[in-house]
Amino acid sequence: MIYITPQCLPNFNGIALPETGGKVNLAMGCPTSAKVPAALESDDVTAVADYLRDNFKAFALPFEAVAKQWVAQPWNTTGMVHCNFYHSSTLRLAIMGDAAHATSPSIGQGMNTALADAAAFDDLLDRHYDDIDAVLPAFSKERVKEGNALTSIAYYVYPMSDFQNLRNTVVNILRNILHRYLPSLVAPDPLVSIGKGGKLSEAYAEMTRMGRLAAARRVNDDLRRGWFEKRVGLIKA
Image 1 (tube, rainbow, N blue to C red):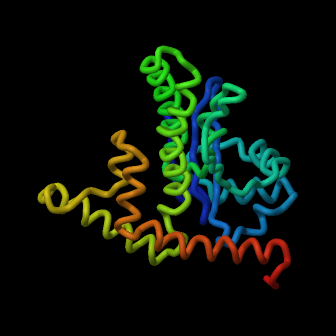
Image 2: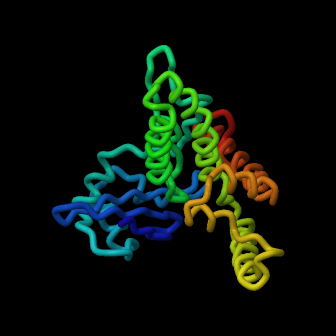
């Protein structure tokens, strides 16, 4: 079971995955626009451990050991993998999962989509009687739109604007309440349908119709571009 740890540190959200042997795989991230405390950017293990001890309250951690890993491991920027097709007929191979559509874990659908890729491939093998030359292009036709919907939704469903986030939260709460009483008039939040096994491409189409992705895209792309320009020295910070 995966545990979501919102605001596990100031401006940071996290995902915790318990493993065997009493271990926990913990990933944390913050928006590129957020101000990161100097202690977390320090190479001083003690400074990092002290900051984590004072601010990380989600669950108990061996702070010194975590701080050593924190200092030794470089930070990564979340990116996306977009592919126009998921197969090569010449090489007779297919790609799926993160190889085809790696993205931010913000909506928690990466593993589900990878499993859906595998299930679709298995179904196509049955439908085409194991004719791999027929299966490969059919696999791309069926799954590329789902993979690209995943990456786009994960990147743009949550705006980096606090005001937009608050507005979307209020609207979605009201939408889900109204849908409960007026299901024929008000559609539910498209994210709810994803959680219930709905197609990502259908959720993407609905979010696009609502203007939700376009609004977040304008804000998020502008902030990401500004962060990149400052980081590489194109403009002064």
